[in-house]
Image 1 (cartoon, helix red, strand yellow):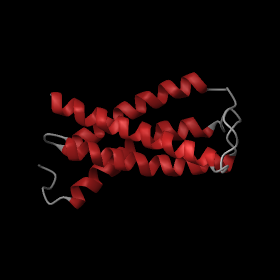
Image 2 (cartoon, rainbow, N blue to C red; image 1 turned 180 degrees about the horizontal axis):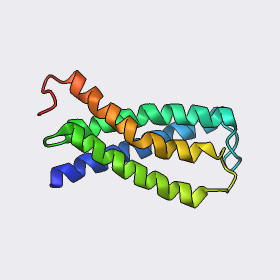
Image 3 (cartoon, rainbow, N blue to C red; image 1 turned 45 degrees about the vertical axis):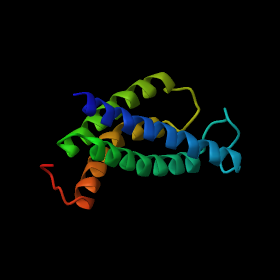
Length: 131
């Protein structure tokens, strides 16, 4: 059980840290507007794009760290991501910091991108789905 929790928490940590670092970089090189200003449609599309890639990699990391059933662990991460996304959606709804579709997209994409990350792990490791 402990290793399962570590696998999922590691995936969450990877996603949060990597996404934040990319955000900071894009602000530093002035691709994004200054902190606190609303994201444009184009900036929200860019943010969604790299968050999908980072989340797929985070789910693959979770699957790699899983003691068994790697896809199941990646899907656990997807459930946690969906729940955290719903909390963020509720907390930011109507604040005008991003287009309205952006937090909704993050909620809707959380589970499928974790499924994709789990399958990416399975495809790149010979252990197969019953590892």
